[in-house]
Image (cartoon, rainbow, N blue to C red):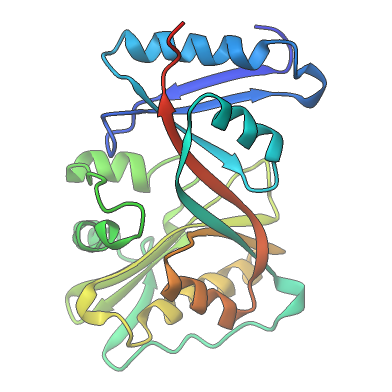
Length: 253
C-alpha cells in the first residue's frame, strides 16, 4: 500500500446490512486517483459479501472529503455535533444523584454487567440515528462494547437504585491521547430520565478526569439528541469538530 493511502471496511453487528467504510488519503496524495481506487476496492470487497450499501463518516470541517462522497452518490443520513470540555476552565462539579441512587464504578461492582446490559437494551434504540441498530447478545456486547482496548472499569460509572442498575456512562481512552478522554456512551433507563441521573454520572466522569490528570474531554452527539446536548452545555462544553454520516452505493466499476 502506498504511503498516505488507507482503506478500512467493517461490517458491524449492529448494522449487518451495510459496510462501515473509512477511506483516508493524505492531503499531499489527493487528486491522483487514490481515493477512487480505494473506493473501488472497498466496493469490490462489499460486493463479494453480498452487500451494496456503504456508510462513511466525514469530519464536518472537511468539505473536500464531503464533496468526494457526494459526487459518488452518497447522501447525509445523520450528523453528530462535536463538543469539548477544557478542564482548566472549570472547577470539579458536585456529584449529586437523586435520592435512593448511588454512583459507583464498574470496577467496584463487576457483577453489575448484566444490569448495565439491560440499560443498553432500553436506551440505545432511543438514541437518534440508532433506532434500527441491533444490540448484540450479552456476551458479544460485553466483549465489544465494554471490554475493548479503550474501556476501563474504573472509568465506567454506574447508577444503582437498590438492586437495579438505572444508568451508566463510560469513557473511551487511548494511549495516543493520554490527556484527552472521549465520552463513549451515557445511558439511563426511561423511567429514571429527567431526575438527575445523567447529570450525576456526567459529574462523576468529570471528577474522575480531574483526578487522573486529563485536561480535555471530548464527545459527539447526534444533532437531534437535545437532552444530552443541553446537559453538556450546562457543564461548560463548547463546540468541537463533529461528524457527518453518509450512505451510498458501492462503485459500479
